[in-house]
Image (tube, helix red, strand yellow):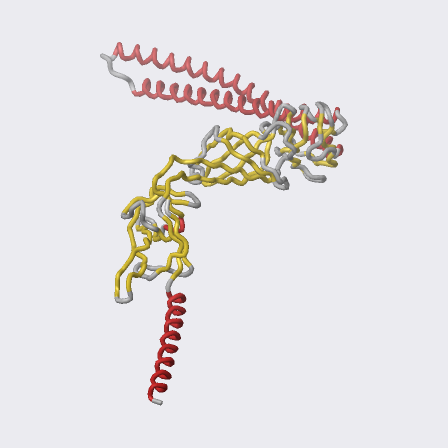
Length: 401
């Protein structure tokens, strides 16, 4: 009877021990972080840069408006093929005639003003001759009077000389001013004459703006009913021009890019990228960089189409590459966590141990590190929960290179 009682107690004890072990292991699996760890590896970094931009043309010819004219109708659309002499815009002919009349009057007034200034310049020439003769007489009188007065200058002679000099200076200033005014007005009149001649050409063409190059219509800036003055009607892309990619990026982000580098370009709406393209130019100004690349001949695209340039540059081979996720800390205070072993009452346990490192270089996936580790150390790169120095860990995936 007593033996049965002991056996019963023993079975209960064993059951409790098993239960506690299960509970302990369950708690351990909850509290101990599961980590992926790997040793440093040899390899290269790949610096990948993307630049957003759009399609443009290598050459553009601008159809300009030199005089304020009202647009009546747009006769072409973006991408329209045009020959030299093709009509692009129709203008309000009544407004056109009114502007031509105003310019004709302004030109007539400008010619009158110039004639007046030229006549005044002639009068100033006479004033200069008179002032010069007066100065010569005053100097001769002064010289004679000094000779008979033991070299003494008479006050009257001094005043005559000063008056004559002042008159001469005033005549010279007036003549110079008139000459400058004439030159300014003549230049202004030439510009007005050019405007007037342009208007007469448009009137001759029935109020139409014609293309003076062969190509295709690019951007259209004018709108029906709009009055343009010193602006552009549109651009014409000459036949000899080709499509280009133009994009901008932060200057620091473009540090790995240079002229001649191979790139790929993805056009909006297109599933396949254009490969084996080279950068034509990388120009930097302040903190921005402008990147240009020629698109292959025959590319189906259009002006303004959105595009993305992708550039990749492979670095030299390094001996200590780790996943970027393995590097912790911030600039100037980087570290890694290495899987170490600690002996205790419960036996040997794996823990996270801190090692200070310096980051030599990195890309968007890996980092090159230097510091307190060996080639055989397992470096924690991933965990199922936050891990700090001294925490117990369980390695569920280890990769040794």
